[in-house]
Image 1 (tube, rainbow, N blue to C red):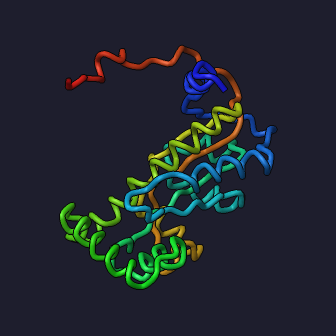
Image 2: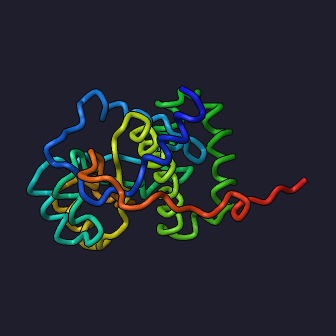
Length: 218
C-alpha cells in the first residue's frame, strides 16, 4: 500500500448519515475493524475501552429515541458500536492490577514499582481529583481506538460515522437497564456507525490548509 492509497482512504471517509441497509459488512471485515481498535495505543497502556456492537433491533430503537445525532445511522447502519470507557482506571484499582499483572505479565516487584510510577503520573495530571476527571481521561483514550477503526474501515471501502449527539443520562440509563455497564465499571463515551453509504457526499471534503494548522519550531 502506497502513501497515495492511504490518503485516498482519508479522502473517501466522511461522516456517513444514511447507510445502504441492504448491504452488510462481512464478519471477517468487521473483525478486522475491531482488531485495529484492540491494537490501539492508550495512556500508560490501560486500554480503558469496551466496544458494544449493538445489532439487536429493539435496543437500537431505544437508543434512537434518545440519540438525536444517530437517528438515521441507527436505522440503517450495518454495525452500530457504543464505545464505553472505564470509570475506575486509577493506578491502585483492581482493574489496574489486572492489566499490569494478567495482561502485561508483570511480577510482583515490577508491578509495585510500575504502580507507584503510574500513581505519580495520575496525581501529577490531577486525574484522581474526582471520578469525572478520571473517567474523562479514560474516555479520551477511546477516541484513539475509534480513529483507528474508522481509518481501517475506510482503507477497505467501509463507511463510518462518529456520534456524540445523544442524551448521556438517557443512554446511561438504557445501558444500565440492559446490564451492560457492569455495576458502574463502565460508562458511555461515544457511538459509531459502520456500513456502506447510501449515496456519495454532495461536496468535496473541506479542510483548512496544512499551513494554517501547523507551526514548525526549529
